[in-house]
Length: 631
Picture 1: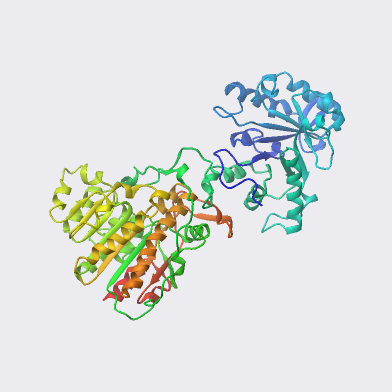
Picture 2: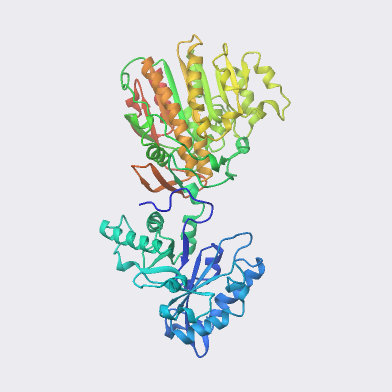
Protein backbone atom coordinates (compact mmCIF):
# COMPACT_ATOMS: atom_id res chain seq x y z
CA UNK A 1 0.00 0.00 0.00
CA UNK A 2 1.54 3.32 -1.09
CA UNK A 3 -0.52 6.09 0.42
CA UNK A 4 1.96 8.93 0.31
CA UNK A 5 3.25 8.52 -3.25
CA UNK A 6 6.87 8.55 -4.28
CA UNK A 7 7.14 12.03 -5.77
CA UNK A 8 7.29 14.60 -3.04
CA UNK A 9 7.89 18.26 -2.52
CA UNK A 10 11.13 19.67 -1.21
CA UNK A 11 10.00 19.60 2.42
CA UNK A 12 10.00 16.35 4.38
CA UNK A 13 7.34 13.87 3.21
CA UNK A 14 6.61 12.96 6.84
CA UNK A 15 6.55 14.81 10.14
CA UNK A 16 9.55 13.85 12.24
CA UNK A 17 8.78 13.62 15.96
CA UNK A 18 11.76 14.05 18.29
CA UNK A 19 10.75 11.59 21.00
CA UNK A 20 12.04 12.27 24.54
CA UNK A 21 13.85 15.24 23.08
CA UNK A 22 15.20 16.32 26.47
CA UNK A 23 17.57 13.33 26.36
CA UNK A 24 19.46 14.80 23.40
CA UNK A 25 22.87 16.39 23.95
CA UNK A 26 21.34 19.78 23.14
CA UNK A 27 17.61 19.55 23.88
CA UNK A 28 15.38 21.46 21.47
CA UNK A 29 18.26 22.85 19.41
CA UNK A 30 19.30 19.56 17.79
CA UNK A 31 15.78 18.77 16.64
CA UNK A 32 14.97 22.37 15.69
CA UNK A 33 18.12 22.61 13.56
CA UNK A 34 16.84 19.63 11.56
CA UNK A 35 13.45 21.31 11.01
CA UNK A 36 11.58 18.41 12.56
CA UNK A 37 7.82 18.74 12.70
CA UNK A 38 7.34 17.86 16.35
CA UNK A 39 9.37 18.02 19.57
CA UNK A 40 8.41 16.19 22.76
CA UNK A 41 9.11 17.24 26.35
CA UNK A 42 8.09 15.17 29.40
CA UNK A 43 7.03 17.57 32.15
CA UNK A 44 6.64 17.21 35.92
CA UNK A 45 5.29 19.83 38.31
CA UNK A 46 7.58 19.74 41.34
CA UNK A 47 7.50 22.35 44.10
CA UNK A 48 5.77 24.78 41.77
CA UNK A 49 8.35 24.35 38.98
CA UNK A 50 7.86 22.66 35.61
CA UNK A 51 10.82 20.29 35.25
CA UNK A 52 11.68 18.10 32.30
CA UNK A 53 12.78 14.48 32.68
CA UNK A 54 11.94 10.85 32.16
CA UNK A 55 11.11 9.94 35.76
CA UNK A 56 10.61 11.75 39.05
CA UNK A 57 13.80 10.43 40.66
CA UNK A 58 15.97 11.77 37.85
CA UNK A 59 14.66 15.33 37.85
CA UNK A 60 17.14 18.20 38.00
CA UNK A 61 16.44 21.79 39.02
CA UNK A 62 18.48 22.91 36.01
CA UNK A 63 16.24 21.06 33.53
CA UNK A 64 13.28 23.41 33.50
CA UNK A 65 10.59 23.43 30.83
CA UNK A 66 10.98 27.17 30.49
CA UNK A 67 14.74 27.21 29.94
CA UNK A 68 14.92 24.16 27.67
CA UNK A 69 11.88 24.77 25.46
CA UNK A 70 9.89 27.94 26.10
CA UNK A 71 12.76 30.42 26.09
CA UNK A 72 14.41 28.93 22.97
CA UNK A 73 11.08 29.06 21.13
CA UNK A 74 10.51 32.67 22.14
CA UNK A 75 14.03 33.45 20.94
CA UNK A 76 13.70 31.83 17.51
CA UNK A 77 10.25 33.31 16.90
CA UNK A 78 11.58 36.76 17.74
CA UNK A 79 14.57 36.23 15.48
CA UNK A 80 12.57 34.78 12.57
CA UNK A 81 9.71 37.23 12.35
CA UNK A 82 7.11 35.13 14.14
CA UNK A 83 8.00 31.78 12.60
CA UNK A 84 9.84 28.71 13.77
CA UNK A 85 12.28 29.01 10.85
CA UNK A 86 13.16 32.03 8.77
CA UNK A 87 11.67 32.14 5.27
CA UNK A 88 9.79 28.89 5.89
CA UNK A 89 6.09 28.22 6.30
CA UNK A 90 6.69 24.85 7.93
CA UNK A 91 4.99 24.57 11.30
CA UNK A 92 6.34 23.22 14.57
CA UNK A 93 4.48 21.15 17.11
CA UNK A 94 5.47 21.07 20.78
CA UNK A 95 4.18 17.90 22.41
CA UNK A 96 4.08 18.23 26.18
CA UNK A 97 3.74 14.93 28.02
CA UNK A 98 2.22 15.44 31.44
CA UNK A 99 4.00 13.12 33.87
CA UNK A 100 2.53 14.48 37.11
CA UNK A 101 -1.07 15.13 38.18
CA UNK A 102 -3.08 16.39 35.21
CA UNK A 103 -4.89 19.52 36.39
CA UNK A 104 -2.14 21.35 38.31
CA UNK A 105 0.53 20.43 35.75
CA UNK A 106 -1.55 21.48 32.78
CA UNK A 107 -2.59 24.66 34.60
CA UNK A 108 1.07 25.55 35.06
CA UNK A 109 1.87 24.79 31.42
CA UNK A 110 -1.02 26.91 30.15
CA UNK A 111 -0.16 29.80 32.45
CA UNK A 112 3.44 29.82 31.28
CA UNK A 113 2.67 29.61 27.55
CA UNK A 114 -0.09 32.22 27.76
CA UNK A 115 2.61 34.83 28.45
CA UNK A 116 3.70 34.60 24.79
CA UNK A 117 0.53 34.33 22.66
CA UNK A 118 2.47 35.43 19.57
CA UNK A 119 4.52 32.23 19.92
CA UNK A 120 2.02 29.68 21.23
CA UNK A 121 -1.46 30.84 20.17
CA UNK A 122 -2.47 30.20 16.52
CA UNK A 123 -5.40 32.62 16.89
CA UNK A 124 -2.86 35.40 17.40
CA UNK A 125 -0.18 34.14 14.99
CA UNK A 126 -1.13 31.59 12.33
CA UNK A 127 2.50 30.39 12.32
CA UNK A 128 2.55 29.84 16.09
CA UNK A 129 3.75 26.63 17.71
CA UNK A 130 1.02 23.99 17.94
CA UNK A 131 0.95 22.85 21.57
CA UNK A 132 -0.29 19.28 22.03
CA UNK A 133 -0.82 17.64 25.41
CA UNK A 134 -0.11 13.93 25.78
CA UNK A 135 0.50 11.56 28.69
CA UNK A 136 -1.97 12.31 31.48
CA UNK A 137 -4.49 13.86 29.12
CA UNK A 138 -7.79 15.16 30.52
CA UNK A 139 -10.87 13.16 29.62
CA UNK A 140 -12.38 14.22 26.29
CA UNK A 141 -15.40 15.81 27.94
CA UNK A 142 -13.01 18.16 29.78
CA UNK A 143 -11.15 19.36 26.65
CA UNK A 144 -13.34 22.44 26.42
CA UNK A 145 -12.27 23.60 29.88
CA UNK A 146 -8.77 24.38 28.63
CA UNK A 147 -7.54 27.32 26.50
CA UNK A 148 -8.17 27.03 22.77
CA UNK A 149 -4.45 27.21 21.96
CA UNK A 150 -4.06 23.79 23.60
CA UNK A 151 -4.75 20.61 21.60
CA UNK A 152 -4.65 17.03 22.75
CA UNK A 153 -3.12 13.74 21.68
CA UNK A 154 -5.88 11.35 20.68
CA UNK A 155 -6.38 7.62 21.02
CA UNK A 156 -7.84 5.31 18.40
CA UNK A 157 -9.55 3.42 21.20
CA UNK A 158 -11.43 6.52 22.34
CA UNK A 159 -14.71 7.75 20.90
CA UNK A 160 -14.99 11.51 20.45
CA UNK A 161 -17.93 13.71 19.65
CA UNK A 162 -17.47 16.44 17.03
CA UNK A 163 -16.40 19.14 19.49
CA UNK A 164 -13.95 16.83 21.25
CA UNK A 165 -12.47 15.64 17.97
CA UNK A 166 -11.89 19.27 17.00
CA UNK A 167 -9.46 19.55 19.92
CA UNK A 168 -7.52 16.41 18.92
CA UNK A 169 -4.32 17.20 17.01
CA UNK A 170 -3.29 13.68 16.09
CA UNK A 171 -3.82 10.03 16.96
CA UNK A 172 -1.05 8.20 18.80
CA UNK A 173 -0.81 4.49 19.50
CA UNK A 174 1.57 1.98 21.05
CA UNK A 175 3.27 0.18 18.16
CA UNK A 176 3.68 -2.99 20.23
CA UNK A 177 -0.09 -3.28 20.41
CA UNK A 178 -0.13 -3.88 16.66
CA UNK A 179 3.18 -5.52 15.81
CA UNK A 180 6.29 -7.11 17.29
CA UNK A 181 8.42 -6.09 14.29
CA UNK A 182 12.02 -5.28 15.21
CA UNK A 183 12.61 -3.00 12.23
CA UNK A 184 14.51 -5.52 10.11
CA UNK A 185 13.14 -7.16 6.99
CA UNK A 186 9.39 -6.83 6.53
CA UNK A 187 6.40 -6.72 8.84
CA UNK A 188 4.41 -9.94 9.20
CA UNK A 189 1.38 -9.57 6.88
CA UNK A 190 -1.23 -9.91 9.63
CA UNK A 191 0.55 -7.27 11.72
CA UNK A 192 0.96 -5.04 8.69
CA UNK A 193 -2.77 -5.25 8.08
CA UNK A 194 -3.51 -4.22 11.67
CA UNK A 195 -1.20 -1.23 11.36
CA UNK A 196 -2.67 -0.27 7.99
CA UNK A 197 -6.17 -0.43 9.45
CA UNK A 198 -5.13 1.87 12.29
CA UNK A 199 -3.63 4.34 9.81
CA UNK A 200 -6.82 4.24 7.76
CA UNK A 201 -8.98 4.75 10.86
CA UNK A 202 -6.99 7.85 11.86
CA UNK A 203 -7.11 9.28 8.36
CA UNK A 204 -10.84 8.63 8.13
CA UNK A 205 -11.21 10.87 11.18
CA UNK A 206 -9.11 13.49 9.41
CA UNK A 207 -6.20 13.11 11.82
CA UNK A 208 -2.52 12.32 11.33
CA UNK A 209 -1.18 9.26 13.12
CA UNK A 210 1.92 8.46 15.18
CA UNK A 211 3.15 5.19 16.68
CA UNK A 212 5.30 5.34 19.80
CA UNK A 213 7.38 2.48 21.19
CA UNK A 214 8.31 1.65 17.58
CA UNK A 215 11.63 0.35 16.22
CA UNK A 216 14.02 2.70 14.44
CA UNK A 217 16.23 2.61 11.39
CA UNK A 218 16.23 3.24 7.65
CA UNK A 219 13.92 0.30 6.94
CA UNK A 220 11.46 1.57 9.53
CA UNK A 221 11.56 5.11 8.19
CA UNK A 222 10.79 3.99 4.65
CA UNK A 223 8.17 1.43 5.70
CA UNK A 224 6.31 4.00 7.80
CA UNK A 225 6.46 6.53 4.98
CA UNK A 226 5.24 3.89 2.54
CA UNK A 227 2.30 3.05 4.80
CA UNK A 228 1.23 6.67 5.07
CA UNK A 229 2.15 7.04 8.74
CA UNK A 230 2.32 10.80 9.21
CA UNK A 231 4.67 11.14 12.19
CA UNK A 232 7.85 9.11 12.50
CA UNK A 233 8.93 8.73 16.12
CA UNK A 234 12.69 9.03 16.49
CA UNK A 235 15.35 9.25 19.18
CA UNK A 236 17.84 10.20 16.44
CA UNK A 237 16.49 13.36 14.78
CA UNK A 238 19.62 14.06 12.73
CA UNK A 239 19.66 10.57 11.23
CA UNK A 240 15.95 10.56 10.52
CA UNK A 241 15.99 14.06 9.04
CA UNK A 242 18.95 13.17 6.82
CA UNK A 243 17.03 10.19 5.46
CA UNK A 244 13.97 12.24 4.54
CA UNK A 245 15.83 15.31 3.29
CA UNK A 246 15.84 15.88 -0.47
CA UNK A 247 13.51 12.90 -0.69
CA UNK A 248 12.54 13.46 -4.31
CA UNK A 249 16.14 12.76 -5.32
CA UNK A 250 16.03 9.41 -3.52
CA UNK A 251 12.98 8.00 -5.28
CA UNK A 252 12.06 7.24 -8.86
CA UNK A 253 9.33 5.49 -10.79
CA UNK A 254 8.69 5.66 -14.50
CA UNK A 255 5.29 7.19 -15.21
CA UNK A 256 5.09 9.04 -11.87
CA UNK A 257 4.74 12.79 -12.28
CA UNK A 258 7.16 14.84 -10.23
CA UNK A 259 5.63 17.23 -7.72
CA UNK A 260 8.90 19.15 -7.47
CA UNK A 261 8.41 22.50 -9.14
CA UNK A 262 11.43 24.16 -10.66
CA UNK A 263 14.94 24.07 -9.36
CA UNK A 264 18.05 22.22 -10.37
CA UNK A 265 19.91 19.34 -8.77
CA UNK A 266 23.59 19.81 -9.39
CA UNK A 267 27.05 19.46 -7.92
CA UNK A 268 30.28 21.36 -7.45
CA UNK A 269 32.27 18.13 -7.58
CA UNK A 270 32.87 18.16 -11.34
CA UNK A 271 36.31 18.92 -12.70
CA UNK A 272 37.32 22.03 -14.60
CA UNK A 273 36.19 20.96 -18.05
CA UNK A 274 32.71 19.97 -16.88
CA UNK A 275 31.91 22.63 -14.28
CA UNK A 276 29.56 24.39 -16.69
CA UNK A 277 27.14 21.44 -16.56
CA UNK A 278 23.73 23.04 -16.01
CA UNK A 279 22.53 20.28 -13.69
CA UNK A 280 19.45 18.09 -13.64
CA UNK A 281 16.22 20.06 -14.14
CA UNK A 282 13.97 18.73 -11.38
CA UNK A 283 10.74 19.02 -13.35
CA UNK A 284 12.24 16.93 -16.15
CA UNK A 285 13.46 14.09 -13.94
CA UNK A 286 10.64 11.81 -15.04
CA UNK A 287 9.76 9.53 -17.93
CA UNK A 288 6.29 8.75 -19.25
CA UNK A 289 7.39 5.28 -20.30
CA UNK A 290 10.31 2.90 -20.25
CA UNK A 291 12.80 2.04 -22.98
CA UNK A 292 12.81 -1.03 -25.17
CA UNK A 293 15.08 -3.95 -24.34
CA UNK A 294 16.90 -5.56 -27.25
CA UNK A 295 17.20 -9.35 -27.11
CA UNK A 296 20.50 -10.52 -28.62
CA UNK A 297 20.63 -13.43 -31.04
CA UNK A 298 23.85 -14.75 -29.42
CA UNK A 299 24.88 -16.08 -32.84
CA UNK A 300 28.43 -14.74 -32.53
CA UNK A 301 28.63 -14.68 -28.74
CA UNK A 302 31.68 -16.57 -27.39
CA UNK A 303 32.51 -17.66 -30.94
CA UNK A 304 35.98 -17.99 -32.46
CA UNK A 305 35.07 -15.68 -35.34
CA UNK A 306 37.60 -13.05 -36.36
CA UNK A 307 37.07 -9.76 -34.55
CA UNK A 308 36.96 -6.91 -37.05
CA UNK A 309 35.33 -4.27 -34.87
CA UNK A 310 35.39 -3.38 -31.18
CA UNK A 311 32.80 -1.19 -29.49
CA UNK A 312 33.90 -0.23 -25.98
CA UNK A 313 31.16 1.41 -23.91
CA UNK A 314 32.06 3.08 -20.60
CA UNK A 315 29.35 4.19 -18.19
CA UNK A 316 31.20 6.79 -16.17
CA UNK A 317 30.28 6.30 -12.50
CA UNK A 318 28.21 3.19 -13.25
CA UNK A 319 28.28 0.64 -10.45
CA UNK A 320 26.13 -2.38 -9.75
CA UNK A 321 23.45 -0.37 -8.00
CA UNK A 322 23.14 2.13 -10.84
CA UNK A 323 22.60 -0.85 -13.13
CA UNK A 324 20.16 -2.43 -10.66
CA UNK A 325 18.19 0.80 -10.26
CA UNK A 326 17.86 1.19 -14.01
CA UNK A 327 16.89 -2.45 -14.43
CA UNK A 328 14.16 -2.36 -11.77
CA UNK A 329 12.79 1.00 -12.85
CA UNK A 330 12.62 -0.07 -16.50
CA UNK A 331 11.83 -3.73 -15.73
CA UNK A 332 14.79 -4.79 -17.81
CA UNK A 333 17.94 -3.62 -19.61
CA UNK A 334 19.68 -4.73 -22.77
CA UNK A 335 22.83 -4.88 -20.65
CA UNK A 336 21.36 -7.68 -18.55
CA UNK A 337 21.18 -9.87 -21.65
CA UNK A 338 24.99 -10.18 -21.67
CA UNK A 339 26.12 -13.67 -20.64
CA UNK A 340 29.81 -12.99 -20.10
CA UNK A 341 30.41 -11.00 -16.94
CA UNK A 342 33.53 -10.25 -14.93
CA UNK A 343 34.62 -7.76 -12.31
CA UNK A 344 37.45 -5.26 -12.43
CA UNK A 345 39.36 -3.76 -9.51
CA UNK A 346 39.96 -0.08 -10.19
CA UNK A 347 42.30 1.48 -7.61
CA UNK A 348 44.53 4.27 -8.88
CA UNK A 349 48.27 3.83 -8.68
CA UNK A 350 48.60 6.51 -5.99
CA UNK A 351 45.19 6.27 -4.29
CA UNK A 352 42.75 3.61 -3.16
CA UNK A 353 39.89 5.44 -4.90
CA UNK A 354 40.40 6.34 -8.53
CA UNK A 355 39.33 9.42 -10.42
CA UNK A 356 38.14 9.28 -14.02
CA UNK A 357 41.59 10.16 -15.31
CA UNK A 358 43.34 7.18 -13.73
CA UNK A 359 40.35 4.88 -14.21
CA UNK A 360 39.72 5.89 -17.81
CA UNK A 361 43.42 5.79 -18.65
CA UNK A 362 43.77 2.28 -17.23
CA UNK A 363 40.90 1.18 -19.47
CA UNK A 364 42.46 2.97 -22.43
CA UNK A 365 46.07 1.79 -22.03
CA UNK A 366 46.29 -1.27 -19.79
CA UNK A 367 48.64 0.63 -17.45
CA UNK A 368 47.94 1.78 -13.89
CA UNK A 369 47.91 5.54 -13.46
CA UNK A 370 48.10 8.19 -10.78
CA UNK A 371 44.95 10.21 -10.36
CA UNK A 372 44.69 13.17 -12.75
CA UNK A 373 47.02 11.59 -15.34
CA UNK A 374 45.68 11.10 -18.86
CA UNK A 375 47.29 8.04 -20.51
CA UNK A 376 50.72 9.16 -19.34
CA UNK A 377 53.30 7.93 -16.85
CA UNK A 378 54.50 9.84 -13.78
CA UNK A 379 57.57 11.07 -15.66
CA UNK A 380 55.65 12.24 -18.71
CA UNK A 381 55.99 9.25 -21.01
CA UNK A 382 52.88 8.61 -23.11
CA UNK A 383 51.31 5.19 -22.68
CA UNK A 384 49.92 3.82 -25.97
CA UNK A 385 46.14 3.62 -25.79
CA UNK A 386 43.75 1.28 -27.55
CA UNK A 387 43.27 4.09 -30.04
CA UNK A 388 47.01 4.04 -30.78
CA UNK A 389 46.94 0.23 -30.97
CA UNK A 390 44.09 0.10 -33.46
CA UNK A 391 45.49 3.02 -35.46
CA UNK A 392 48.66 1.04 -36.02
CA UNK A 393 46.51 -1.88 -37.17
CA UNK A 394 44.77 0.28 -39.75
CA UNK A 395 41.37 0.51 -38.03
CA UNK A 396 39.03 3.47 -38.21
CA UNK A 397 38.79 5.16 -34.81
CA UNK A 398 35.92 6.86 -33.02
CA UNK A 399 35.55 8.53 -29.62
CA UNK A 400 32.09 9.59 -28.42
CA UNK A 401 31.01 11.09 -25.11
CA UNK A 402 27.63 12.22 -23.86
CA UNK A 403 29.58 14.94 -22.10
CA UNK A 404 32.58 17.18 -22.54
CA UNK A 405 34.92 15.63 -25.09
CA UNK A 406 37.98 16.91 -23.19
CA UNK A 407 36.90 15.33 -19.92
CA UNK A 408 39.13 12.63 -18.50
CA UNK A 409 37.55 9.44 -19.84
CA UNK A 410 37.20 10.37 -23.52
CA UNK A 411 40.51 12.25 -23.39
CA UNK A 412 42.28 9.08 -22.29
CA UNK A 413 41.46 7.57 -25.69
CA UNK A 414 43.00 10.31 -27.84
CA UNK A 415 45.34 12.36 -25.63
CA UNK A 416 48.31 12.09 -23.28
CA UNK A 417 48.93 14.51 -20.40
CA UNK A 418 49.84 14.51 -16.72
CA UNK A 419 46.98 16.90 -15.83
CA UNK A 420 43.35 16.21 -16.69
CA UNK A 421 42.41 19.90 -16.51
CA UNK A 422 44.89 20.92 -19.23
CA UNK A 423 42.12 21.23 -21.81
CA UNK A 424 44.19 23.18 -24.35
CA UNK A 425 47.00 20.62 -24.31
CA UNK A 426 44.55 17.71 -24.36
CA UNK A 427 42.62 18.97 -27.39
CA UNK A 428 45.89 19.81 -29.18
CA UNK A 429 46.52 16.06 -29.23
CA UNK A 430 43.76 15.85 -31.84
CA UNK A 431 46.17 17.44 -34.29
CA UNK A 432 47.87 14.06 -34.65
CA UNK A 433 44.74 13.23 -36.67
CA UNK A 434 44.57 9.62 -35.51
CA UNK A 435 40.85 9.54 -34.74
CA UNK A 436 38.42 9.42 -37.64
CA UNK A 437 35.41 10.51 -35.61
CA UNK A 438 35.04 12.56 -32.45
CA UNK A 439 31.75 13.60 -30.89
CA UNK A 440 30.87 15.31 -27.62
CA UNK A 441 30.23 18.70 -26.03
CA UNK A 442 32.62 21.49 -25.05
CA UNK A 443 32.65 23.85 -28.02
CA UNK A 444 34.19 26.65 -25.94
CA UNK A 445 37.34 24.55 -25.51
CA UNK A 446 37.80 24.80 -29.27
CA UNK A 447 36.74 28.43 -29.78
CA UNK A 448 37.83 30.21 -26.58
CA UNK A 449 41.35 29.04 -25.89
CA UNK A 450 44.09 30.39 -23.65
CA UNK A 451 46.83 29.26 -26.03
CA UNK A 452 45.44 31.38 -28.88
CA UNK A 453 45.47 28.42 -31.28
CA UNK A 454 42.87 28.40 -34.04
CA UNK A 455 42.35 24.72 -33.49
CA UNK A 456 39.07 24.66 -35.40
CA UNK A 457 40.86 26.02 -38.43
CA UNK A 458 43.72 23.55 -38.01
CA UNK A 459 41.40 20.58 -37.62
CA UNK A 460 39.16 21.69 -40.47
CA UNK A 461 41.98 20.96 -42.89
CA UNK A 462 41.49 17.26 -42.33
CA UNK A 463 38.05 16.99 -40.71
CA UNK A 464 34.53 18.08 -41.34
CA UNK A 465 34.02 20.19 -38.21
CA UNK A 466 30.30 20.29 -37.35
CA UNK A 467 28.31 21.43 -34.33
CA UNK A 468 25.14 19.37 -34.71
CA UNK A 469 24.94 15.61 -34.29
CA UNK A 470 22.35 15.56 -37.08
CA UNK A 471 25.21 16.32 -39.48
CA UNK A 472 27.24 13.21 -38.64
CA UNK A 473 25.74 11.01 -41.34
CA UNK A 474 26.23 13.65 -44.02
CA UNK A 475 29.93 14.03 -43.29
CA UNK A 476 32.32 12.74 -45.91
CA UNK A 477 35.51 11.33 -44.44
CA UNK A 478 36.82 12.28 -41.02
CA UNK A 479 34.48 14.25 -38.80
CA UNK A 480 34.58 16.13 -35.50
CA UNK A 481 31.20 17.01 -34.03
CA UNK A 482 31.17 19.30 -31.00
CA UNK A 483 27.50 19.71 -30.15
CA UNK A 484 26.81 21.21 -26.74
CA UNK A 485 23.50 19.34 -26.63
CA UNK A 486 25.68 16.33 -25.79
CA UNK A 487 26.45 18.07 -22.49
CA UNK A 488 22.83 18.34 -21.38
CA UNK A 489 21.31 16.01 -18.81
CA UNK A 490 19.35 13.12 -20.25
CA UNK A 491 15.58 13.56 -20.15
CA UNK A 492 12.62 12.26 -22.09
CA UNK A 493 13.13 14.63 -25.01
CA UNK A 494 16.75 13.61 -25.64
CA UNK A 495 16.86 10.12 -24.15
CA UNK A 496 17.88 8.58 -27.48
CA UNK A 497 20.63 11.09 -28.24
CA UNK A 498 23.57 8.89 -27.24
CA UNK A 499 22.02 5.87 -28.97
CA UNK A 500 21.45 7.89 -32.15
CA UNK A 501 25.03 9.18 -32.12
CA UNK A 502 26.33 5.66 -31.47
CA UNK A 503 24.43 4.30 -34.46
CA UNK A 504 25.54 7.22 -36.65
CA UNK A 505 29.15 6.74 -35.54
CA UNK A 506 29.04 3.07 -36.46
CA UNK A 507 27.71 3.96 -39.91
CA UNK A 508 30.33 6.67 -40.36
CA UNK A 509 33.23 4.43 -39.33
CA UNK A 510 32.01 1.72 -41.67
CA UNK A 511 32.20 4.23 -44.53
CA UNK A 512 35.93 4.71 -43.93
CA UNK A 513 36.82 1.74 -46.10
CA UNK A 514 39.29 0.48 -43.50
CA UNK A 515 39.60 -3.11 -42.33
CA UNK A 516 37.58 -2.52 -39.17
CA UNK A 517 36.90 0.04 -36.48
CA UNK A 518 37.34 0.77 -32.80
CA UNK A 519 34.68 2.93 -31.16
CA UNK A 520 34.65 4.13 -27.56
CA UNK A 521 31.29 5.44 -26.30
CA UNK A 522 30.97 7.11 -22.90
CA UNK A 523 27.79 7.63 -20.91
CA UNK A 524 29.31 10.53 -18.97
CA UNK A 525 26.52 11.77 -16.75
CA UNK A 526 25.81 8.65 -14.73
CA UNK A 527 28.80 10.06 -12.88
CA UNK A 528 27.29 13.55 -12.68
CA UNK A 529 24.11 12.12 -11.13
CA UNK A 530 26.14 10.30 -8.49
CA UNK A 531 28.06 13.46 -7.63
CA UNK A 532 24.67 15.22 -7.37
CA UNK A 533 23.15 12.41 -5.26
CA UNK A 534 20.26 12.31 -7.69
CA UNK A 535 18.61 8.89 -8.09
CA UNK A 536 16.23 10.00 -10.88
CA UNK A 537 19.27 11.33 -12.73
CA UNK A 538 21.17 8.08 -12.18
CA UNK A 539 18.29 6.02 -13.57
CA UNK A 540 17.57 8.23 -16.57
CA UNK A 541 21.27 8.48 -17.51
CA UNK A 542 21.54 4.70 -17.11
CA UNK A 543 18.63 4.18 -19.49
CA UNK A 544 20.17 6.60 -21.98
CA UNK A 545 23.38 4.56 -21.82
CA UNK A 546 21.51 1.27 -22.18
CA UNK A 547 19.92 2.51 -25.40
CA UNK A 548 23.43 3.07 -26.76
CA UNK A 549 24.40 -0.44 -25.62
CA UNK A 550 21.41 -1.78 -27.55
CA UNK A 551 22.65 -0.10 -30.75
CA UNK A 552 26.06 -1.69 -30.29
CA UNK A 553 24.61 -5.17 -29.73
CA UNK A 554 22.24 -4.84 -32.69
CA UNK A 555 25.19 -4.05 -34.92
CA UNK A 556 27.20 -6.91 -33.43
CA UNK A 557 24.38 -9.30 -34.28
CA UNK A 558 24.14 -7.99 -37.84
CA UNK A 559 27.89 -8.03 -38.38
CA UNK A 560 28.98 -11.21 -36.59
CA UNK A 561 32.56 -9.95 -36.19
CA UNK A 562 32.11 -7.27 -33.54
CA UNK A 563 33.15 -7.47 -29.90
CA UNK A 564 31.15 -5.31 -27.50
CA UNK A 565 32.59 -4.56 -24.04
CA UNK A 566 30.74 -2.56 -21.38
CA UNK A 567 32.18 -1.39 -18.07
CA UNK A 568 32.82 1.76 -15.99
CA UNK A 569 35.86 3.68 -14.85
CA UNK A 570 34.55 3.70 -11.25
CA UNK A 571 31.34 3.97 -9.22
CA UNK A 572 30.13 7.39 -8.10
CA UNK A 573 28.07 8.21 -5.03
CA UNK A 574 28.15 4.93 -3.14
CA UNK A 575 24.55 4.36 -4.20
CA UNK A 576 22.69 2.00 -1.86
CA UNK A 577 19.23 0.76 -2.81
CA UNK A 578 16.84 0.75 0.14
CA UNK A 579 13.53 -0.44 -1.25
CA UNK A 580 11.52 -0.87 -4.39
CA UNK A 581 8.64 -2.63 -6.08
CA UNK A 582 9.18 -5.12 -8.89
CA UNK A 583 5.64 -4.69 -10.17
CA UNK A 584 5.58 -0.90 -10.44
CA UNK A 585 9.28 -0.28 -10.95
CA UNK A 586 9.40 2.02 -7.95
CA UNK A 587 12.93 2.32 -6.59
CA UNK A 588 14.40 4.10 -3.56
CA UNK A 589 18.08 4.67 -2.88
CA UNK A 590 20.52 6.86 -0.99
CA UNK A 591 24.10 7.89 -1.69
CA UNK A 592 26.74 7.58 1.01
CA UNK A 593 29.04 10.14 -0.62
CA UNK A 594 29.12 12.72 -3.39
CA UNK A 595 32.43 11.34 -4.64
CA UNK A 596 33.81 8.20 -6.24
CA UNK A 597 34.03 4.88 -4.41
CA UNK A 598 36.56 2.05 -4.82
CA UNK A 599 34.00 -0.73 -5.31
CA UNK A 600 34.61 -3.37 -7.95
CA UNK A 601 32.97 -2.69 -11.31
CA UNK A 602 31.26 -5.25 -13.55
CA UNK A 603 32.56 -5.95 -17.04
CA UNK A 604 30.08 -7.20 -19.64
CA UNK A 605 31.16 -8.65 -22.98
CA UNK A 606 29.30 -9.84 -26.08
CA UNK A 607 30.48 -11.31 -29.34
CA UNK A 608 33.55 -13.29 -30.43
CA UNK A 609 35.90 -14.01 -27.54
CA UNK A 610 33.52 -12.52 -24.99
CA UNK A 611 34.08 -15.36 -22.53
CA UNK A 612 37.64 -14.06 -22.01
CA UNK A 613 36.21 -11.24 -19.90
CA UNK A 614 34.82 -13.49 -17.18
CA UNK A 615 36.61 -13.55 -13.83
CA UNK A 616 38.07 -10.91 -11.52
CA UNK A 617 41.03 -8.77 -12.58
CA UNK A 618 42.38 -5.23 -12.50
CA UNK A 619 40.88 -2.62 -14.79
CA UNK A 620 44.07 -2.85 -16.83
CA UNK A 621 42.97 -6.38 -17.74
CA UNK A 622 40.14 -5.07 -19.91
CA UNK A 623 42.32 -3.48 -22.64
CA UNK A 624 44.82 -6.32 -22.27
CA UNK A 625 42.09 -8.79 -23.24
CA UNK A 626 40.95 -6.59 -26.12
CA UNK A 627 44.50 -6.45 -27.46
CA UNK A 628 45.00 -10.19 -27.07
CA UNK A 629 41.79 -10.93 -28.96
CA UNK A 630 42.67 -8.59 -31.84
CA UNK A 631 46.36 -9.39 -32.29
